[in-house]
Length: 265
Image: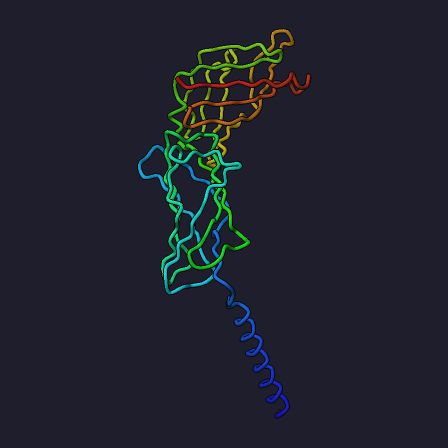
C-alpha cells in the first residue's frame, strides 16, 4: 500500500516537472524580430467607397514603447502601380504593448484589373529590433471584383463562336434566367436548341461556368442528335462568358471542340 502511494507521488511529480519544462520551452526569449504575420493575400476591390485591405506586420516580442517598421516595394515582379490601383503608407506602427501593427492598402476599383496585379512587399528596416529571416516578404494580388448577379446575364447579347477550321460565326443571342445560378441561351447554335449554362462564383479569383451534357444540335446528314458539354469562365465586371464545348454523338464519337464568347449588351 505504502509502495503504491510513493509511486503515485513520484509519478505526479514527474508529470508536473515535464509540464513545467514544456511551458518553459514555449516561452520566447530571443531578439526582437520584425516579420509579416502571413506571406500572401488577395484583395478583391469592389466598385464601392473605402475599399481597404489590412496586412499585419509584427514582432516576436512585446515592447513598452512603439516601434515603426518600414516596408518597401520589391520592383522585380511587382505589376501594381502605386497611385493607380492602390495607395499605402509603407510605415507601420506597432503600438506599445502589442506585437502587431496594421498596414492599410487602399484599393482603386477604376484602375484595378479583373486579371489581377501583383504587389510584392519587403521589410526594409525596424526602429527597434532586427528583420526576421522568415516571413519578411509579402505578395498581394489586387483584383477588380464585381459580385455575381444572375440578372446581369439575362437579356440580349452578342455571341461569337469559332468552329474547327477557325471559321468565326456571329449571332445575336438572348439569355433567359433558369434560376439564381443558371441561364439558357436561346437557339445557341442556330438550330433551335436552347443551351443551359451554370455559373459558379465560389472562388472569387476564378468565376467559372459549366455546360452539362445536353442536346446541342441535330444533324440532318446523320439524322441524329449531337450533344454538347464543356466549361469556361465568366467576368461579372465585363459581363462576358468564355466557353469551350465538345460536340459528340454517343454512337459516332466526338466531333471535336469549339470555343466562343458571349458578350452581354
